[in-house]
Length: 118
Image (tube, rainbow, N blue to C red):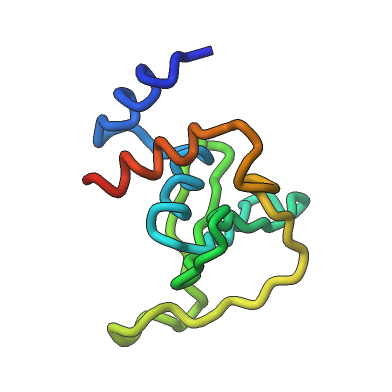
């Protein structure tokens, strides 16, 4: 296991790809609902939501397990203008994140604060 401070220092490197922990911290810091699609059709889509419940917008990303990284996603034909992405319908969702704001694990809050300070 990597110590938290070493993890944060590694994630500061612009060449380092974000992981689910950084995606959750981004969702919390920017008040985003992140819909995560997967390139394996056998795997369900899921969403990351900030534990504080304040959601300002929704974004979609694709998790590519073969390269272990995320790519942005827009619906086919969306993006011809400068507006926000259209909603992409989805049905099977698994909520990932803290079940309560007081579960004793503050690492995502610390990382969210790190994002917010940038």
